[in-house]
Image 1: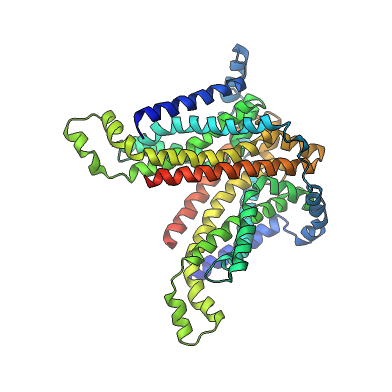
Image 2: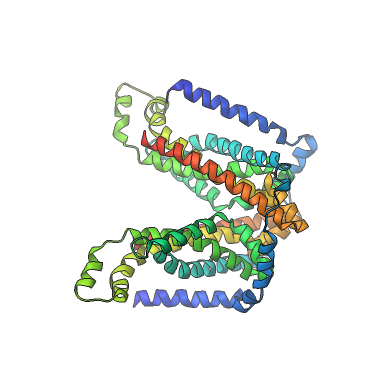
Amino acid sequence: MNNKKILLSLFVFILIGLTTNEYLPETNKKGQEIFTKILSGENGLFNPDLSIYQNVAKGLLESFQIALIGTVFAGFFSLMLGILAAENTSPKPISGFIKFTLNAIRTIPEILLAIIFIVGVGPGAFAGILALGFHSTGTLSKLTAEVTESINKGPIEAVLAVGGSQISVFRYSALPQIMPEFVSILLYRLEINIRAASVLGMVGAGGIGKTLFFALMARNWSHVGTILIGIIIVVTLVDYISGRIRSSLV
Amino acid sequence: MNKKMTILFFVVLFLWACYETEVSFKSLINGFSDVNFFISEMFPPDFSEVSKVFPDFITTLKMAFVSTFYGAFLAYPIAIFAANTVTKNKFLNVFFRFFLNLVRTIPDLLLAALCVALFGANPFAGIIALSFFSFGIISKLLYESLESLDENSFDPIKAVGGSWLSKIKYGIAPAVLPQFLSYCLYVFEINIRAAAIIGLVGAGGIGTWLNINFDLGQYNKISSLLLTLFLIVAIIDFISAKIRKRLMGS
């Protein structure tokens, strides 16, 4: 790519950018005053009200539980589906069909799933768990299938050579190869799910999102600030711990 | 022994979480007919209004496009400061990396809800939220590829007395340009999905119509909107994947 092309594409980018000018809100002095008040005023975002820590901790704990259970459910199903979807462990039509279904599941966003499950089981943490579990099954099974497809054939042949059955092939050669990678992607999914669980509450699926939603609705910025700090701490903590475990696994 | 203890710990953690969040498969089975009703209401999709709301699909695409551009624009300099191969300053590296980690802990939907509360329910709020979100991803990916650059390749520039800026201009910018563009496209793909979803919390675009139709209970219109969205996303993913392959290949 030469400089001319880069300049030209930059120009096109800026041109399209200018067409979004219509979305700019009107600003005036009063608006700016309100904006600074929201951010740094006495009751502002950067003046978090730490006295509600108990409520926030409860919400965060629930979000963590939602993420944990959702990931475990998804892990349970995706270990089976992943192996069924792998081309080297299952017949072609079954593998193709499951892969197609998994692709379809992955296109539905978690937040929509949460809304659908709320219709079924009512608002609360369980709807969030089901939404996360369902969506994560789609992504985890795909990754598990990829891991299964990349396993080494040597150990399988070794078990077969000493007269092992299909079950012992699975137990003693396939599973030990899949397991470390599987746990690693499971933990990675937990990191993603903890973020998702913190927003699912906004549609009524429990957790810290619910607390945040009420604080936003009430325009209670100092509470919003505290909740944001809480989410950042929990996400960072889970990322850190899970990262440590993952690096010791692989 | 250690391994058994870890597994036991997770099992107890899981059971406790299940108890606390009131996981009940009875309610899932009872609610099955409601979910079934909800989904059967979605079919057949009613495409009569898709052409009417088509401008909002364009708004969603524009939101995704512009925020990718803003995000990338901000990400480039920050990634340069965060990469230890380019900026030889431990303090700056650590500071910017910590900042980037902080940015990435906040989920996109949460940012959107916050921006809607700050800037009002319009696409502008969505653009700000997504720009921030894209900035986090692009700068992380970019500084990682900056760090994987071979430092010896800068020696000729140093040898002829090139400054820090000419090192970036002649040594780094051409080397990471394909990756950088590829990351931008990748984030654009993510942003289209995100831009549609954040409309649910009021950030403009097609999500607004999803929200309205949810409230009105017109589920067959929702399914038509979702199917159209999937089609658009699939087309853009396909084109973008093609371009990315060529970029990484050259």
